Structures are given as C-alpha cells and as structure tokens.
Image 1 (cartoon, one colour):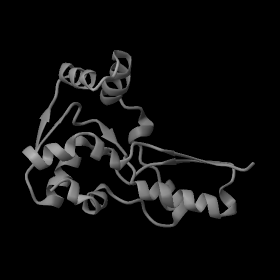
Image 2: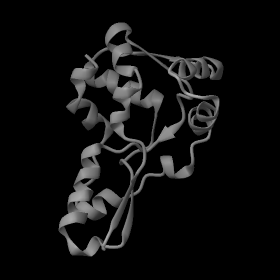
Image 3: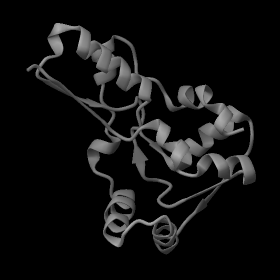
Length: 159
C-alpha cells in the first residue's frame, strides 16, 4: 500500500477553540499566557490542498510533508492582526502560570497534561512549531495562506 504522511503544526482554526472568540466579542480582551511564544500555524485549507495533491498525483507516494503556515506568529501579533481585520481594539492580558493551570484544571485536564502540553510547550515550544517551511508552495505551486486571510474568512467569529 502506498502512503503519504502529512504532519501539520498547530492549526489556525484552534483560535476558535481557545476561548478567544467569546472574549473578543464580549469584552474586547484576550487572556493568554506566554504571549510571545511563536507558532507557524497553518490554514486548514492548505492541509486539504496538500492532501488532494497527495491523493491525486503519483509523485507524492512514500513522502512525509511537514506543513506550516507562511509566518511564525506570537499570540500578541495574532491579537493585533485580528484587531486590525475587525477594526476594533483588543486588549491582551497576560496570565500567570498559576492562572493557566487553574483554568485548565477547571476544564478537567490532569496535572501531567497541563504541565507538559500547556506550560512547557507554551514556554519552550519545539523549533518545528515555529520554523516556517516552504512545503505548501512546493507541493501546491502557490504560497501558504496567511493568518490575516484566515481571520478575514472567519471574521464573523470575532465581531
């Protein structure tokens, strides 16, 4: 059986599940820890475009594609971009580690998950999370979509 492995980093769409949308709509505030931590988030449509190529063209068999967006962004820069797209001021309030732990604990997550995936990954993300790669353009022939494009497509969740 032939195969192609797609390995995307964090999805742009994860912003919708982070609590940001409700907080922006209601209060014009984002509460987050590690606002300078970088991620080369990827647009979900870029993942789909690579998958289509892999499924419909011969030369992708047996390859592993590491997929990133076109820019490494911090939470602070994403908040700024969202604010510019919706033309509304958004404040960023930095949470302490203790506040983040309490928040995730209240959501039912255990200490081991919180300490590793939330705290350690937030403070010290692995290099592959924030290293921008040209894979999308190499496979599809067009540049990866930006976070601003994604926000424009999903602005109804922020207004």
